[in-house]
Length: 465
Image (tube, rainbow, N blue to C red; front, side):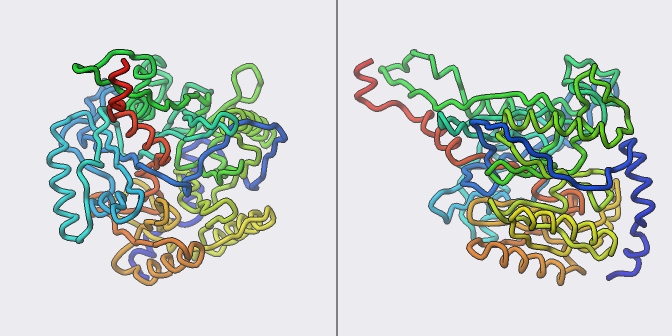
């Protein structure tokens, strides 16, 4: 490894100080599984289930003026992922191609986006279909759609699909609905968070896909043509502050995250569980409350809440852990002995719960120019999309680690095609942020229902009307 890069790597003590400074509290020392016997009629849909769409964002790159925190960035726009990944995500060589949904309020951007993607597809000799790219009319603050995108659920009794919507926050601490450090932001303007346009993106996507007015609209187009009723999906607010990068479900009632969720959510006022440095008893009380909410809206009965071994500021589990299937989990390994011992303990915990555990070595990487130190290449921060897995590559100088990461996925998922993707030079993959953070899958059935709603009703139905 490059000696200069190694010398610039922060020490474990520096990381601990950095974590305390950013969050205001000590990370819990022990991981734990919280359980409930409460039966719920819903289940959370896992990312490895059949998907028909991917949500990405094309935001502006010029921040809003000081004093206007609710406005989205303006100026030149940028994707957080390379064009190659966008083109490959369509999977047009498969029996079930994937639609790409782009959060972008400017319809004039469609033509240059399509032009650039077509050029990339021609260079790679991959099919690209402009008809499967859709602009969702909303401008976000950032391109981290995993953090603020919708969490999909299915009612196991009615069969209906739904969204369980969390309130997206970029900070930790504070009571539900208000983030510590945002006290001067009007809660009516963005729910008291610093990225209100990101938080509202899930609502705008649901509006785009759902079009609930059609459920009751009896109007007919000239000539008597009607649109069929759309198979609407349900909508629920979780009442929790959270981020999608710290959300991993196996589709069978298990969820895993770091303890960040406990520092983000205080129990509703009056329970005496406040404070910026919560005790173990307070953490337990908060997690029981969080589990109750997730059981009610997501069908969660087993919560693996884990102390983040890396000590980085972000605290998102997708930087070092990932469910690959109902009974498979991928956990990082580290070159740092103490960090790796903590990863080993997490791996043992999952094995004891009946999971097949796979490991991937995440080398220590420092990215010059990044706001914060990235201590591991986020090979776990991959995009699972149907029978393919797109894995972030660290690139030049780290080829041996990249190849080992590809082999780890091939061993764990021999029936999948594993594709390595290099990041954009201006937005490189980091140890705390890669392609999983910048994409969000949409279930295949949701997309099919939406596409069906766009087709005119059968001629016989129109005539009868």
